[in-house]
Image 1 (cartoon, helix red, strand yellow):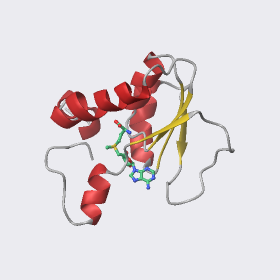
Image 2: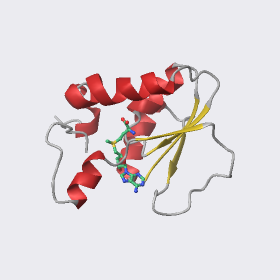
Image 3: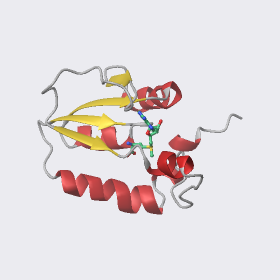
Image 4: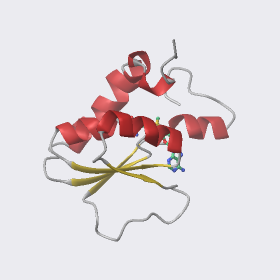
Length: 124
Ligand SMILES: C[S@@+](CC[C@H](N)C(=O)[O-])C[C@H]1O[C@@H](n2cnc3c(N)ncnc32)[C@H](O)[C@@H]1O
């Protein structure tokens, strides 16, 4: 039996931080997204992308990790607009392409850079 990747495990996606704090807060802040063109920066395996799309947004996602994008592709389907890109470099989108940008790519990355890890996140 092959273990499922950590990011696709329900426990990680629905844990205290992701399922009950961060994602609901982001979605509440976003408000009515129907018809809005939204860039999901650091989309990971695509849970936020999926939630936004379910609410009628036109979503584009990017991530620096091809592995994460593979998981996102599995979740979101072949027609999902997904790209490999890094926030540290110019992004491959024209000016004015999006109405909103959602970005939550930094939690563990930032903490790791500072040699600490947010213990309860578990997403990265
Ligand atoms: C916590 S996950 C966020 C997943 C999703 N945005 C969500 O809210 O559920 C963080 C993601 O950010 C990505 N990431 C970190 N640094 C990045 C960078 N500089 N450019 C692009 N993606 C980055 C990681 O590869 C990881 O998939």
